[in-house]
Length: 254
Length: 334
Ligand SMILES: Nc1ncnc2c1ncn2[C@@H]1O[C@H](COP(=O)(O)OP(=O)(O)O)[C@@H](O)[C@H]1O
Ligand SMILES: [Mg+2]
Image 1 (cartoon, rainbow over the protein chains, first blue to last red):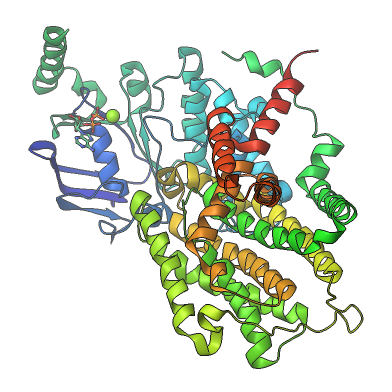
Image 2: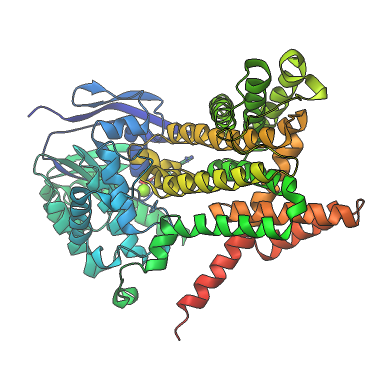
């Protein structure tokens, strides 16, 4: 299958610390990839590098055959590369409805309109309502973000990414901070997305990872140590060592 | 965790909808305008100047309150409008007041584009310093181009035509004041539409989190630059009104002092709200007028004390704090 999204030999150092070490990952349309690894492995940094929030020291990112390494984050979003944030980034005094509406209007090229209210277009509002409903946020749509629970803010984070209709979707720990009872919503929402969308998800919840992923990549200390099928990952010696190592470190630090 | 779910959301009340559409604001401006005329009939020149400065403060609110760009150079946009209207009248014979206002609007927008282009290169403290550099450059340019601007003597002999050939710009300033009130109402209505629009939402988003804005595929820089141009147009209309009503334009309209005072008025009234900008202007300028007459030496001390009190005890400004208080009272269960 031809690759839709390709990262080649990506490198990044923070001072002396190697955070991304020659990472290459490619994804085809329809991929469901889980990126896992101990805390501090460089997973979030990887997303920041491919979305343009950080500049790599070397390496290339291509999207649909086009090299986007030198483009800014917004230009990559226009080309269909969309992310969510591990730590929620929302507008505190806006409502969920305003967030999703702004994302839909932006996608349609209407976010610069200087007159009329966002709710003025029926087809936009239908789509906004459908997205909010899918993530269980419809009843909260008129509350300010700062008035809703953190778990619901996490769901809104995903709703915004979905509203942009990406070709490649990068989710940074979408379920972190979401109560167990609500993670099913995330899974159902992801399942409802177009089949040809490529999704990369970072998460620590292994049950979720195994239900979601057709492929797993394990990152440890900035290096890809495993890239293969979910059923093989737990048996892999290097993966076990990486996780045990980090748990041992955490144990000794505590 | 879904405690708030049971709070049913009714459709917004009639007053809320009217407020959103700016109807209440426009009515308030017209009523306040009439009250000013009845209460201070001998001070219409001051009231007209207050309206002109209110437009400057509104224009600062657009970039500072809504978009989060701090600036100490915004009088450059106001002064550009004032000189634009004045030069049009003196050198080009454009003496129709509405045409002069239009020239002021365009000159302000152009100045907004130029200073936005410069100021938005930087962030934070460097941005503030650039804004100060901009106002000094504008000031110096107007000073040097004395053939056009009258230099430090100011540009005088601006003689606007009668309105529609009927209403003279009289000695008492009734015509200029009425024109100012109408202009302010129109500007307010336009800005109310703007801040409620998708673009207005985007602007508020830019203030809060530019990384999120980029992750949505929008360009903060483009939003900010467009807002600077709009802000310049608003300040330019204020400058033109000032030129029309006082019939002179001086270098003080392009000064750092005016920039800083206007920012103080905004903070006093409350940033991020059109009402806050207007209320801050009125309170500050009324204070300035009464106190400087009563005690010309210490009025700045009192203004300073007032400002400290507002920043410490009502950090959202007079209007912002009052609105927040009203909101709390309304939400309290009966
Ligand atoms: N902007 C930064 N500057 C310096 N170090 C950073 C920065 N961002 C992340 N790091 C470091 O890089 C390492 C990887 O971080 P991160 O990518 O957030 O890991 P993960 O998401 O896998 O938990 C960590 O040691 C972290 O402290
Ligand atoms: Mg992370």
